[in-house]
Length: 430
Ligand code: IMP
Image (cartoon, protein in one colour):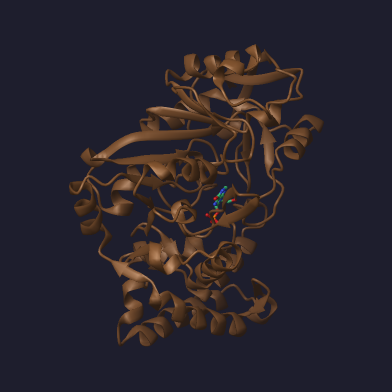
């Protein structure tokens, strides 16, 4: 058996949570391999809406085991809130179905402080971070003084914590800010730190494992495993528009380092893209629409960040960027989401190439801050997709749109999402 991968091909928020939820009955285990609570995976299930930040999206399915891999960074305070939300809203016992790699790293309260201070100091060059402490926590991991989940059971945990906390506070002091003026999730630093320590109580109840061995054993036992990506390919720390990226490898290669599996154990790669594009945070976005068409996409698609509530930047589908993402990930199956957002557009524009200085290029260059999108118009379908449950009932213009994406990318589209609900996902291969 191999580990299949599901990830976003744009700037995140492609609707991954819903697709994992739909696919999870076909898998025995769902694993997160990178990122942290900067993610916000929204799932609508039985009329209820769930937003998951750290826990894999398989948690809503009682028969699916969920693993947080070593490549993930965990904030126990945020995790605790998620655990309580799932228990209160849906009676889900997370402890029974969640396993955590001992090697995953922790986000400390001072990582959050550092994120806030460092981001504020960037002025106009702000990345637009979710301020969840992602950059500072991954920095400590790479600099080899981070604290791992397994450390919470050791005798010297408190000493390690204090050493790192004090190191952080020294750095924060150099920014000449008074931490009394900064709040974290509505708490001042000391109150937040207390809450964080209290959340370790639940955290210690969660089962920790050596996930790399566990996953190998599960593969040998013919278990079906899906790796669930967070953020999106164009936010990858190596291949996104650096520095306007997150701090992890969001691409398929991250599955190997984030779960401890060899490349030969990677199976299908499901790539998810919206029928248009969105991005939160700053950085290049060639097809961004700063006019009423962008506003309409935002309104139709309810494009507001699920982690931060920020309005998302919206624009037309960007094929050079999509081809780049497909290439980096080795995507074998494409899934197109949120087609219903385009229901009332007479004409849909699609970027097929860029003007880059004096050249026309159909790929994404290093300097993609300075490209101008070239568009081709596509007829809209101008009707509701609400009642559609089979590809044979697709309006012609939607079928043409999907075919155009397949032709332009060379990858078959497997599924099309036509609305927020679980049953509004049409399997084109059925
Ligand atoms: P950070 O990872 O919170 O530091 O944010 C870095 C950049 O990635 C910012 O532009 C964020 O808005 C963006 N980002 C981080 N996580 C997500 C996500 O899950 N969806 C969409 N954008 C994200």
